[in-house]
Length: 499
Length: 95
Image (tube, rainbow over all chains, first blue to last red; front, side, top):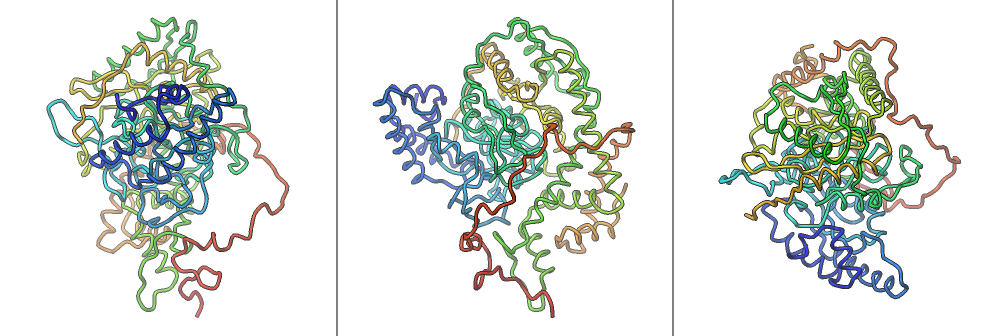
């Protein structure tokens, strides 16, 4: 198997044993990346940076071997980086025209940590504009395309969103793993749509510094990988306290990989009855039942639980997220960076703001900024924004109560369907697209860790995933549960290469 | 609550996004749909519930109020669409 298809764990072991060099591993991914343009996953390629980093990684691995130690696990691992992360001197435009040409003078904390650990950046990955979308169709770069297709069909499917480029690149073996970010499901939904693993850690586990802000109280970065073990390895490298992010938690980061014991005997898994939605496809219900059986078989106790405010999570999210976005995106005004509209004689500063923002932001981003502006405006702040924040407190309390009752992790579907066709939702009401986040958004509102694990294929041959939700700061046990689910499900299917 | 065309115009103005008159009816319709979806929140009894300000009960870190960086004017201005003589340049603000 060519090296671009490897897991991080396999590559780490091969690099340490000297069976492959980081340069050869990187070359293998660069070749796959160039052959993968049909997926439109990589939108800015950085082969020179990648090869420089790979050479440095080889030197570091050789030095470590001489001194009898091990280089960090991520040393020499080729990654794709979501366009939302600021990378010094490399375009970082959140898939928006308003940041066209923006090359940050600084490096995000997450990429700094990964590069310090020796990781290699192949390039920047496609996404929904400002991470607002569930299908990667709001990107200024055009759609990313799912490597998976329905059996006997050549209809282009969405890789999900907003981390659609990350999901397509990992599932299509253009890189070993990728960074993603998740505000309402943007790591977990695309992971489920492409048959890979994606974890959103507890809010505060990973620094948000240098990640273009969408909704600051909900945003978290996380890894998107080919296995749960890889997610543990990469999350380890991304996590940790950062004085530059005031909401970053000053807590020790456990050894996530060491937590993958495969033993979940006696653990209690909650099955929330409110996640059984009307009109849920039979295949999703069957997948969920399979997952329950797998965890039971591994010795866990399964218990029905209730999270009564689940139904209100989406409407609360679509008040809070746009409100925070309208405030965060006020900075894009054509003054300090990015696009400025061409002005006509007599235009003042207000015209400059209004024209710049009309030209630079796409329709979905404009819509969300305006919804946020409305719910924060005088007279509506209490009725919408404060009420949503109160409902958010109740949603979190639902989780607090079940965890206090002894639940270790919660098992739910990851998405209400398999990947849908690009363009299929074009004429739909915006609210219909929002329903994609129905199983994932509660986790962001409550600040909890959640992981999507590929568990099966639907009748059309498309991957389906389940979601496990953990206690706050308990990514270690959550990943162990995910590891058990992954081993029992034995998901090994790969998309047939057409690109 | 339905958003009429005047409200849509006002929201666009507050958000500093130019919306052509011809596009306002469609925008008003979409905003109404989204806000209608949010109306479900009125079913929830929130009596005595405090609005959430932070998902984790943590006190924000404090640090000494001192300058920790600076002297990076060129870097700050590097990405500006129009920078002159060490400043961001914008159209005339006062007559």
